[in-house]
Structure formats: structure tokens, C-alpha cells
Length: 263
Image: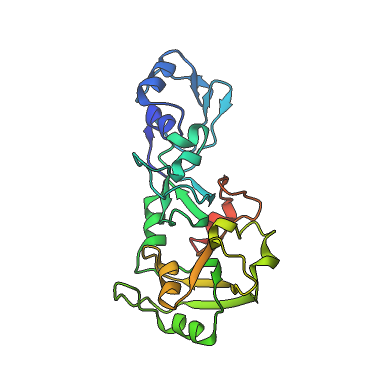
């Protein structure tokens, strides 16, 4: 059985307000524990206890897990004085639930980002010891060749001299001209500069790596003489980006998804 926690702490961790705000509501008799009004903020409660806050019966878990389709206008941080962060996309009480992002995505990169309150899970998914696969969809200016695929498999030396762990580069499609892709939501004019010449070469691929160095995929392609136009993370371990999530949207993970990364 999980340990008992103070009633005011439980409600605060669920994002219902600050400890002082919650203590006031408790004193006013707004909280019921197992059907009985509780006016003691220090009352110990277990996950098995039923807690009602006003008209709402709380759905409590030991930890909480969400996935977000990260937007390309924010950094992966819990707070920043100058930049918009992924936390700004959380709404309602989720802003106050002590959620934090697992790992990071570069500012301009879109796609799967996991949020949790579970520190052990975050360590599992980010520790170099565990080497969790991360899968990306990438659009590259230039033609990808077998030599590029081979370079990913053996490890690419970055601009600072670091050689990456072996990864996978899977070619999906190549096109001769950007003119055939202008309707694509993932290729934007500002991404490719002012040139719309028919001689522009584009490659579409999947990338699978097990590290998360700063701007790693962009730097890997840069070392190979290619430029990344668009990058989206689609999978992290067993968790797959929900195709129904628009950029900037998020949802709680299902029980099945949660169990998948613990087995």
C-alpha cells in the first residue's frame, strides 16, 4: 500500500490551489473524506480513500503521465524569464500539479514530449544507462545516400568532436523539387529560405537514436553536409505520439500506455 499523505498536500499536488488556499477550503467544510466532512488539513489519506472536493469526486493516482505534441515556439523547461516554455501549454489545474517534462526537445522541434510527476520514470527514460530508443520524422534539404545511412549506423562525429552512438537512418522518400510539397503543413517557405527553385532536392526519412545531445539530429545531418528543414519526434520507448493531438495539445496517458513502459 502506498504511504498516507496529508489531505492538504494531496489536494495541492492535484493542482486545486496553494496549501493556504486549500486549508481555507478545508476549514469551510468543502472537503469530504469517505463521505464525511474533514476540517483537518493534516488528516492522513490513502489512495484508497474517497475524497470529494465540492461536487467533484477526485480521481487520484500515485503518479500522473501525459503526452504532448510540442509546438515549435517554446523551449523544454519548467520556467524561463525570457522564453515561452512547454509549461505554458498546460491548462487549468494541470499547471499546478508538479508535472515536469521528461528529457527535452529543441525549441524548433515538434512532437512527442512526456510529462510526469514520477521522478523514477523520468530517470529511466533519460539515463544514458538505459538507452531508450527515440524515433523522429525528418525532412532534409539534399539527397540522402547510402553513405549517410552507413554514417548513422557507425556513429557521426559532431562539430565538437563527439562521436554519437550508432543510430538508424531510414529513407522514406526523395523529391527533386520543393514545388511539389508547398501544400504540406510541415514544409513552410520560411523553413527553406527564399529559394523555390525546381533544382531543390528534398529527402524524407526516419531517424532512431538513443541519445539526446543538444540539437543532436540537426548536428548529425550538418556534419554530413545536409540541412534539416523539419523535425518531429514520433516515438519515445514504447510511447507513440497520438496522431489526433494537434501541435500544442496534450492528453493523459492511458493505463495501457503506462504499463507498456514498465514491462
